[in-house]
Structures are given as C-alpha cells and as structure tokens.
Image (cartoon, rainbow, N blue to C red; front, top):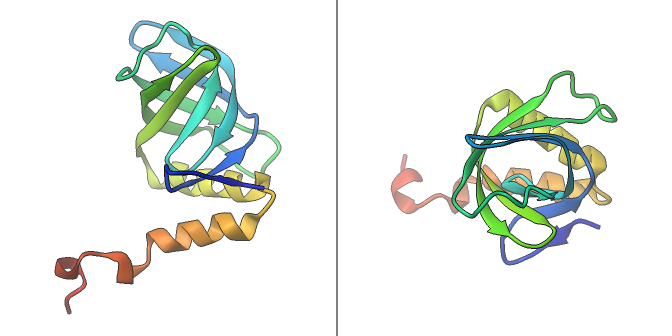
Length: 132
C-alpha cells in the first residue's frame, strides 16, 4: 500500500533507476526506495548535503513511458543509507509521466489518482483565487 506521512503526499515504495547530476558529482544508476509527486528517496549519494541542488533523470522501462523523466531537485534529508530529494521544478510532460509511473506501480492506484485530483480542486484555492 502507498505510504502517507506528515509530508502530505503519498509515497509509493518502488525501486526505479535514477541518475542524479550535482554540480560536484554525478551518480549514475542509483535506486530509489520510494517516490511521490513531490520527491524521492534514493540509496547512496553520501557525498551530498541538505540544500544541494541536482538534476534528476528517472528511467523506468516497466511502464508505458517513452521518455526519461527530467526533474530539478533539492536535497532535504541525508542519513546513513541515502538522501531525500524534494522536486522543485519539472515540465508538464515529466509531471504527467511521473503520475503515470506512480499509478502504475502503486498497490492502490485509486488513492494515488485521488491525490492528483485533490491538487486541482478549486475549492482548496484561497478565496482571492476562487472569485468569479
């Protein structure tokens, strides 16, 4: 089942292949522990620290995605096993491909899809943006 935490986004446990490109280091063929719409946790990369920025390339051949998912990220957590990265920027194609990957690999795809819909719920926008 997908994991939900205080981070407010569903984290889907999955191992996918990622490349991380930092200004001082490139990590090829890393493996994720989990992935969400807002970030990922990846094994290794001990040379990085919180606040470091990177380019992320996610490639997963088991799902119907025909391109590499490219995302800009920032390290927000470091521990003995790996690093947590917050997504800070991605284009629309990468976002929709990430959604597809999460739905495809989740044990509860309806829960994951519901999270996507909640992000676009006009009732959740501040009053100033909800006026006609």
